[in-house]
Image (cartoon, rainbow, N blue to C red; front, side):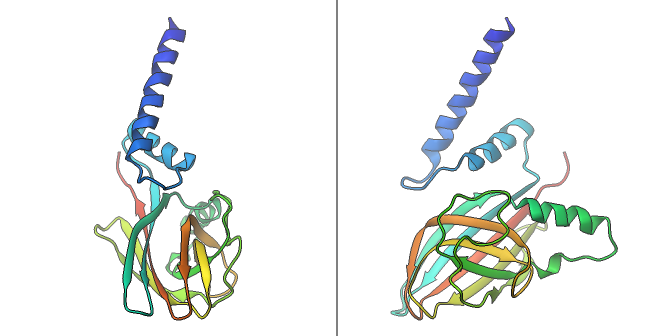
Length: 195
């Protein structure tokens, strides 16, 4: 009988996966990591940390393109290690995660990504820091004006203006920018408490 229960559970998981895939916006790339985050929510009712990245593009002709949330996922292994290390020390080092950078790399996101695959080479933009809609959301917003033409496909949040540790790398569909175009990055990290 255990085999039958296992088959039934696998069918339920597959149904959940199919329903979840159908809810995604057409044309977006579905990442297995996104599914597992949703599955953890389904199993346990929460995900300890989840991040989202939203994009608005301000064109030099005055038009604004609101692309909404382009990526939803978890943070890097390096950030989690720093979180644990900081909790064990007397120094709080999280207030430095406010430097936004972007690039043109297209490799899939991974928990081990601590840098961009292909940075644009422009200076990082310092983001504002605040609570999001609730007290358990860290929010940083930065607007970068591009000095060159790029097809932006990745973003990362760093803890330094140069070098440093990447908290979270996001990969998304290409956003073309020209000289003078601006991208407003809105990064939110949700930390769930309780049980």
